[in-house]
Image (cartoon, rainbow over all chains, first blue to last red; front, side, top):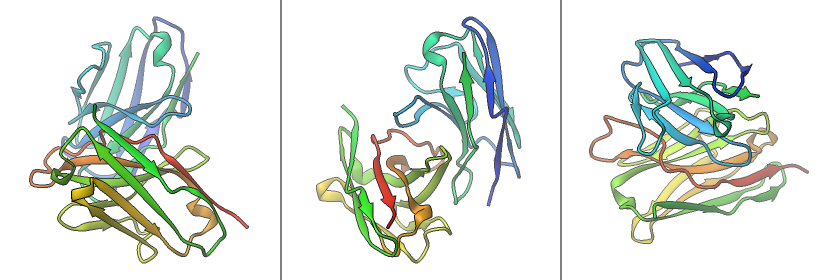
Length: 106
Length: 120
């Protein structure tokens, strides 16, 4: 199975800050990397797929990059609605696997 | 509007069974590989099972859970037998990719989730 490791597990930031979350895969996953945002009591919501393609409706302050086994999600100019938990997920092979999540707190 | 709606969760004793349903609307359900994902109280996300032309299972549920679908009724199912305390979670259904072109896999959309609690 492909293991996904996110860091940090949590971070504190202020409105307007730029934050970066990293995700490492235990083996190369090509371009098959997605990012999700989850708010308390809600289902996760797709933000980015294929490493860096923003899902329709996702603000441009979200960006992502990476290749092979190392990937990043950056939020430039944190907004109040961005305080949430973020998960990476590999779609290279079954079983599909997620990172453990990064909670972005005020 | 694209929507997935799960039902069937509840409290069940260890060793018991439960059947989850997920009804889709707003997209061509039969064209998609559909999946179940669960989230434990500790907040980790675990993919559980998927069904397209074939079925896929996580090792943790293989032999106990069975995924199926009724395309005319736009409904996905998860039959869960031999339930264990560690199966306690919120269960989500989600569309994953087109059955005939799964080059880009992504969980979208998601349902709102249904809570399964396994406890005596």
